Length: 195
Image (cartoon, rainbow, N blue to C red):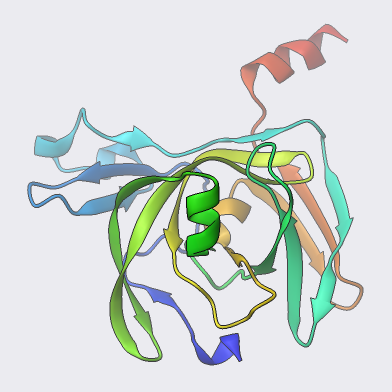
């Protein structure tokens, strides 16, 4: 049923082959995202924020996903929280969490975003989560939308703003997911080179 509600994000984060994204606000307070700092208009430079970088306690994650109908579910956590079932949605440019999870993890509000749904254009809250991950691989300081999905078993959608930080392989027959971070924290790189 959730496929009937297709989210086209008007603020396009899609085709994120390069995981670096920068955000800035214009004079009206509208949040914008671009792929490089050079794309930011001169009058707004200096206030931009570079979006999150992947971190990992593993070199690669291999996981068998749960499948319900035609959807794969990913066990997502927020730092040290319990795991929540999220729909893996490579067609979603921006991840989405439920209102209940946003409240539970005390996500910080950073604005709103206009999205198009089957019912028309709606403004949804945007929050920043400190850390969002899957079993040891995570992304820090992610900005995600907040909206409850019609699927009771789904706590949210995990979209390309998360997966853009990883080399990703998904076997749609078996449900095997492999994620390898594109970036490693400087500390991990130093530790790796010492071995």
